[in-house]
Figure 1 (cartoon, rainbow, N blue to C red):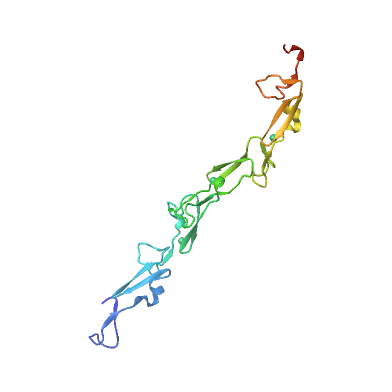
Figure 2 (cartoon, rainbow, N blue to C red; figure 1 turned 135 degrees about the vertical axis):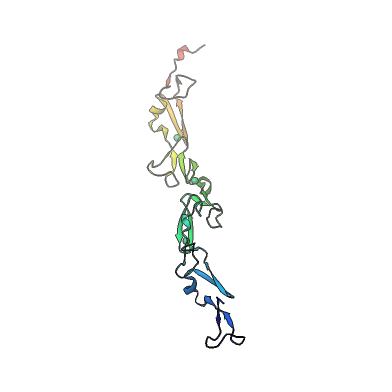
Length: 225
Ligand SMILES: [Ca+2]
Ligand SMILES: [Ca+2]
Ligand SMILES: [Ca+2]
């Protein structure tokens, strides 16, 4: 029968010289080709591709001339790595990595469509990411920093962080342009205040002292009584 050979080919087949199973898998590669398992059983055998491999021509049996070859998992749709990830095909496998600004949902599991890369909230995850006197705004894949009102970044050409922090604006350096004439300017962290000199009053008492609403001389002669 097919799949069996007579024990001694020089003798007739009978109960003393039986047909026995051919172990086709003894030289597996010559039967199933590379990247495959060969399973021998009574009367026949089967070939299976290793995980990560598929037969070259799916319409034909696995064999040395139709071997198992690497699957490019990165061409799958939807992506095996899920969104926001890079896929790198490897022989017999593949590798996923998150794009910059993203991290695996569960960091103890490998990245896949079931454990996708999600945005890192840098404002929460990285302590003091923008440095002092700043506002952190998380975005998908990134974040941005801005200075709180009353503060300016040290070097506006560089990103705001601990090495280039937001620092107090010294509004009083040009006091006259801020508070107008006849006034004191007091700078403090995050803001400043204007005060009129003695004998002077702000023009419009309902508005803050400024160049446009300066301190003017009080005509004490008009005071009553
Ligand atoms: Ca592969
Ligand atoms: Ca982010
Ligand atoms: Ca200030």
